[in-house]
Amino acid sequence: MTAADNDGITDRDRSSEADDMSFKVECFPLGPLSENTYLLTDEASGDKAVIDPGYFGPRAEELIGDKDSLKYILLTHGHHDHFAAAQEYMDAYPDAVFAAPEKDTYLMYKGSDNKDFADDEEDAVCPEAHRLLKEGDVISVGESELRVIETPGHTEGSICFVNDKLLFCGDLLFRLSVGRTDFETGDWKTLVRSIEEKVYTLDDDIVVLSGHGPATTIGYEKKANPFV
View (cartoon, rainbow, N blue to C red):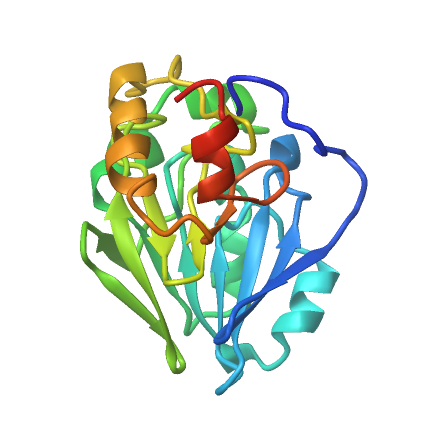
């Protein structure tokens, strides 16, 4: 759900990797609306986490491997295309913790926009989260960590997951674009403020992994993004 078309978005089955010193990241752009589902593997321990579980399928299962290796199922915001397969992960990996943004519970459980994208009313409701996330929370996956930052605008409760190399930002920021704000609880001025004050203050070389489309960097978006 972007404010403008992004270069490089396709509907084909693709899988891409981005590595930092602690996480190996696999991207599946196969969820509803070509939503990007990310599988993170802590290279020291083999422990894993999924970010934005819109897609679930054989390739993801193959890479996850042992059922107890998936520690977290993480959600950036309460739109259906990002949580569409959350229940499938929860059923397949019952020991994994499903963690979602505290301030997006309205959209996750009562939001009307999700009904327009889901196959039926039951699918439009997000599964109940085991843990609700807020600013400053830390997710530990093996020896690696992700910090939670609150970045409202695309939705009221949107969050990002960040470490010193990677930013998983959901639909806040895209390559040369930004998230839409015309859905429930969205707000344009709040989105711009979140990008300027929470994202553009991070290191320029951090890789931005968005909810749709190709990867980018904070430095590139600061120079070239026409919306901020």
